[in-house]
Structures are given as C-alpha cells and as structure tokens.
Length: 270
Image (tube, rainbow, N blue to C red; front, side):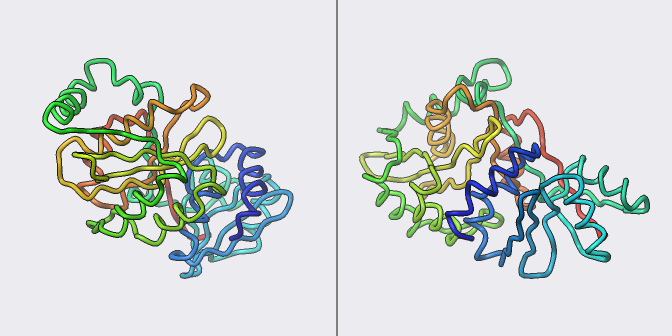
C-alpha cells in the first residue's frame, strides 16, 4: 500500500462508520508487508486479502458488501464486527460466525487514561508513583528531531510472545510524518529506555500502534503511555490498543489498564 492511499481508505471508513483499528490505513500499512495484504478499493468500499488467501471483511456500502459476499462463496473472512456478522446473515442466513478473541481490540477512554482518576485506577497510580519516586525519569514527545532515540530502542528491543514484530514498528517510524504519528520517549538516567506512538485514525479514535521498552523497570510502560495520552486532544474520545494476539501476559496487562469495551471480532466461511 502507498501512503497516497491513506485519504481514500480512511475516507471510506469514515463514510461508512467503520471505526475499528483493523481496517485503518495505519494498521493496513504498517502490517501490510508481514501479512501480505492486498487492498481492492473503489468509491463504495474496500476489502483486503492476506498472504494466506483470507479476507478482512469489507468496509463500505451495503451494496459493496453484498456483492463481495455473493462474489466470494467459500471465502475465509475475519476481523468481523457484530454488525458485519448480522449483515452477512441477511445475505446468507446459514452463515456461522466464530468468536476470535485473539483479534478483539481493546478500547479505552482517553479522558480516563489521561486523568487516571477514581478507585479503579488506584493500583495504576500507585505503580506510577513508585516508578517516579525510585527513578530519574524524563518523558519527551517523540518528534522527527529525536526519532533516532526510538530507532535505538527498537534496535535493542527483543519481542516476547505476541508482542508484534520489529518490521511493523520500524515501518511506523520510517513513515512517522506521513502517517501523522505522535508519540513519547521515556528516559531513565538520561538514557532512552522506552517509546510509544500512534495516530488519530478518525471518528474520535486514537490507535496506539507501537510501544517498546528495553528496561524491565516496573511502571515504565505505564509512564510512557500515560504521558502520551495526556497530550491527546479532547476530540479523541477513545484509544484503541489493538488486540492481545492471544498472549496471556499481554491480555492481563491490557485488562489491568481498564478498557471501557472490546471491539469483539469474529471469523467464518462465506
């Protein structure tokens, strides 16, 4: 996918009310190479096929989606929302959807994550307080002037199960300005040890697409994200941190951060 496709893809999402991170240009672009994505789009919608011949169900008009269903009998489809499942059943009444929890997206309130107020964030506040008390910490917005610090972190970072790949994170940094990304870098003792970044993907949603740390210091990940979330404009209502990729550790961490809901995802055969 080319950067020049951004306005078209996200414009179609906005036009037809598709707010999930899975179909955002940001997601399709940074994961496109590893997933082998090929996008087919016209003025009424778009669909994506991956390297295994599976389809991300279309975002588009009812006619566009109906034509896709009728033109692709037996196709494997995934990243289906509740409303997609319901729509498919209006065309194929016998369609059976299977919940795909490893791909469900965790969505948070921007206001809650920025303030961390209330009883449910008591443990988070305590962990952050200890982190700042025990370490010499500095958080600095990630810009093109200090993006080399993020590259440095990424070059050292070693992924754990389900934590994503280096290529997608590097592609985000390589296209930082073109993708309209914003981010934060955290330093401990004046050494860069963590960063995160994401972008406004429209409809009041900010997608956090990358978060990397090279220190096991408790509270580091929380600090970097919290500092970024505090900088987001009030026009952002939700923060989408994508899925947990089936990793129990990531699932626990994402739930500990108190999502307000999940974008549940499903899969099936047309």
